[in-house]
Length: 183
Image (cartoon, rainbow, N blue to C red):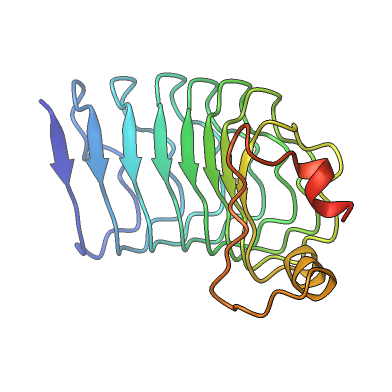
């Protein structure tokens, strides 16, 4: 079985609903509080707009997770094979718990003040709309987007940029983060 769709079904749990062999689960716009109990065959989960509070108990086979607009306060429990996660619009205060293999993280509009906890091999992070005041400890060759953060506003003021659509996307090899913020 390829995928199963539980879009807007009023569900509070997926336990017992997803058959073994399912690869992708779509369970957006429900009232689900936990993703525990899913079959080991799952590789992709789309669970935005729920009430999920934890990522503990997920299969290590999972590679892609979309849990934006939930009630997460931590990324502890993210499976080690996840290479992309969308955790925008949660209540995260830290990025601790991300797996070493992660390539891209979308964590916009949380309660982050730093980007500590990023694995060395990460390739891209989007963290706009947080209260990030430091990017200390961030790998230098990372693509980063951080609009509407204190660092972004500081950069605009110091460099006389007034275009509010400027997103400061730093691409690998173009601008090193340390050079960018030291201006």
